[in-house]
Length: 193
Image (cartoon, rainbow, N blue to C red; front, side):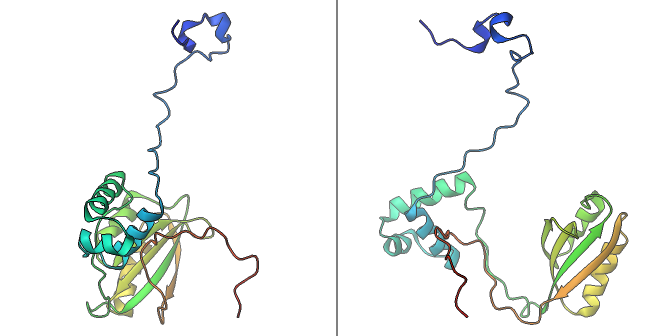
């Protein structure tokens, strides 16, 4: 006997509340997250520190053979865990020493086609939709306060924008990409002073 599916039963058996309607095509299926083990995390941490390493060198660092590391990296790229490989550039050396975080207040949700056009400027490093008193958060790196002012002028002419608040970084103590590690056990007490 074959396994029965909901379509094998009469409407009375299924219930008359419309439960028999197939809704599989209405809900998009989330891609299944890959299982990331301790070796994957060590490989990802090593790549985040220096993505130019050979598979042989990565293998030595994590305790696997070069072919095993190659296969794991291939799988991590295919799954989207590794989005790309990037060079870490120095903003000041490129003539953009001013780092600012710009909170955009807007009527409604804030994200609009016109606001998305601001992403064409190379000064924009990140854009996030956020919860709280702002609706959008930009991370921008500019050549000067005047260049930041010109960027803000572009934001203020976007329909629906009601204001901005800019926070200029004076010093940067930590700036890093997404880290492979995960804190499994947070301390019960705050970190010591």
